[in-house]
Length: 358
Image (tube, rainbow, N blue to C red):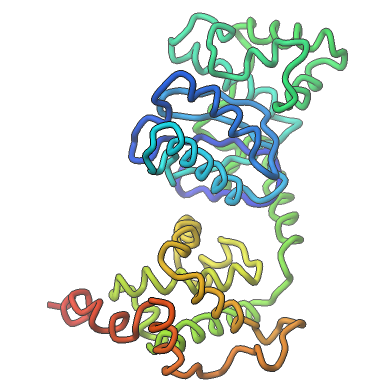
């Protein structure tokens, strides 16, 4: 896929290609393949439609009832937990790099699933797709597929009769000239999409309907409020907080700003635009917050984070115009968070502007 193409957000059917973390294999034993199908089928807020597994890759199609970043986080956590149970070692299994593709159900779902089931054949692993054990192909050929995978969404497009639709599927799989998708090519010049280009605009509009309607000025004020809160709590200036040359400080505190904005139901794309960051960076930041900051600090920030435009904000919880520096010191002592000196000066002296300029 073209790295310049954007991912779409919101509920919908998505194609995911997951790879192993640090280019390592996802599966280390045969029985892990069976576990993987069960893990994918029990992710909350999603329905498994199809899958095919290889040592270093997982290709799957999920009907997501919630936005896909949360689905992917749950998949990563499930595979990490499984690896720890099986091998008594905690490590990331699924890579952070992923580009979900929205799927047009009526135009491309059948072609996509056939393409995925044919991958073992096109990679010369087996002469026929039915011989490959680690895909959902055999469920689509069955008259009674298990309840944890939804084969009907695609099969109903092929034939309305329950008995004949599996036969129709087999016939298509045996047809040499059957249409297959190019999994590396989107049908939209700007977004990652399999299907009619008009679906991208509809998906954007649908996602925006689920977002609070805010003007550009309101978004800017939210950003400024979040920056002011974090800078005040840690006793640093706004300029220092946003200065990426203080790398350690920037990478530890700016995710807190993104976290506050996410609590106001802003999308990753909107947050990235407000903070002048790449959209793919925001999920990484948000996932790292629990490990980088104590829960007591996060609770205090949540209590203070009541933007002026929030109708439920009470006067005592409104964001202060200037948060006292001594509050930041108290937080540092109580919560083990970064002290102002460690954050702004001592911790980043080797990475300060003066050193960089030398």
